Length: 251
Ligand code: PGA
Image (cartoon, rainbow, N blue to C red):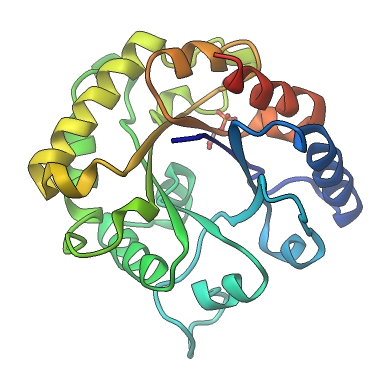
């Protein structure tokens, strides 16, 4: 399995010109790195302007809706994304759960539709409280509901991101989860998936880590056994992000 590095640009950068420059700089910087797959997830308005001829660099979206079309003001369907060349979609990010009230039930519907339409889906799960880290009850619930009824879907198209909420958006990676925390969480999630869905069906699911990943710490997460990373702040600086990709490949 090739390492997967996903850039989550969130609601950045502020203008298209900057988005194009960032995208093109990253495209140039990663074009010869063959042992990592790179996905850039920009805001919706930028997607149609960003083109990658590089088979190693793919486009993703940060969200999508659970219906294909209709009276759903403000929503974007997986079909619309596919039409623009988008191959990946992030679903259930903690910021959408927090600010937009997304529930596990909504995420389950989105996940089903995205997978049905062939979008490679990146489901985010994570615990909120650093003090109770290691207690995986919250993650159990998120997985149980978000993955309900997915037994017969093509789960090789699913990636799960272990993204503890307390580790997101800290500066300079100071409070990222430790590689040990991550190793334990990935082991736990794998076992939980085996019980929930069955080992034969879940063995193809990638598990990546998110939360203050940067070029200095990526190596330790890959060494801890994750299949890649979801990168926020560090993906907004081309050189730093290219180094994340490079260091994820040189393990
Ligand atoms: P961060 O964001 O790398 O800035 O912590 C990660 C994310 O929220 O996906």
